[in-house]
Length: 318
Length: 290
Image (cartoon, rainbow over the protein chains, first blue to last red):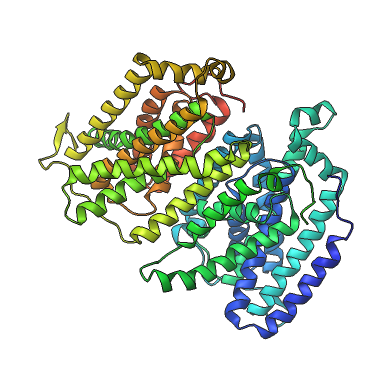
């Protein structure tokens, strides 16, 4: 905690957006799509890191909030012809509202039981996506309208820039949160909730606010995802996606905002590399086998760098 | 209508018999180490896939099954030695992440070794379905129920009537004091993983003829096993048995009477309710606040 970084998050984040703007002009469109994916995953993971890394909690259901954001925006756009710009805000609000309500159930629990509760709530929400015919049931939404500015309809490049602009905004905001009294109090809660309460910290309220904030990040990312892919169904937001967010969070460094970006980039990039390399060695390899390597990396990181990840080193790694 | 509901109940008993076995593994590990092992379902996958792959290669079913249970136990031992033991200084949340990593890694390993195609395992014995008061149970379901009886009886005898079992109960009741009496807590943690993996692997083997075996079957089984374990009480082996059957029956009733989509959902709704209203479960004692 003693080493809070001096450089602001804002300028670096802005630099990152400029790099992305340059990259999308030179990269083939396939890589532009990956860049968008990394950006959106990073956005979710930044929110997750606030909740898990800073507040010391755990969520195995974050994909559900991504889904809520995506479904809200898609439903408004497909059924109500509402622009995705408003859909994005609505998605964030609905995700926040659901997180707020669920926090009264989930945040009474700690560690093991909190993990189980968030896992269960995530799966129940996914079942609702599947069973609710109004939002497409198991077939979801097709032909979701895209973002547009005036007459300019977003292409892959524009989505990459949008995603990373949101990452920059998200990092800048989270950076301010982390360095405020609020953020320092969160760290105090993760260091010892009872101790923090003894210092008159309303830990329930802070945990709830952080949970809601993490849902906002997920909801925004979901709304952009829905429009950029123009197709969503319940399988896009399964428990496996929630586990992937945990992988990104922990691999990148759970109490680090840049760690969220690095984690998302590593998981997506490594997945791509493994998908191309492993079949050369093992021709029969199919499916998401890269998960094996990601799982091993996760365990190795937790064993070899246990203090680097859940310790109280604060922002030392950024 | 009544006949239909009775058939759902029987289907629930068949499903619940498997859940009870997975849940028993969770409870064993939770009792001894205080950890929730998110990889528990993958031991069932390893058992089911190994047995099916060997049987497809021409090995008799019972030999293939025996080797599969050994393979699952070995996986449990390796998980403990390579991932859990080296991280023994870790806190609760870190251990959750580690077992999640194990879950992801084992599922990926299953995919690398056996691919995406489902494998099938012949039923242990042929024969017609058994009529139970107008409903039917398949012969393989009877094998699953027999496995439940044997496993839970063995666990009961071990914990109540052997010296080692008493020592484990002492270690669970009060780890520091048990430790000063020379009870080797770490050795117990190791064996709890091996036993949980063996029971999980056995569950996978006996269910494979009913559902066939796929690399991702561990996810669904593991999730159902959690619900059953929490429902019955995370620290209670009889609770795992009861929780397994209660969950199986509720799932099949919800699936039959509401919609198949809610079959899994209703279990997790119950899980949330139990966690909030009665965190110790149906048969458990007070929840360990660790």
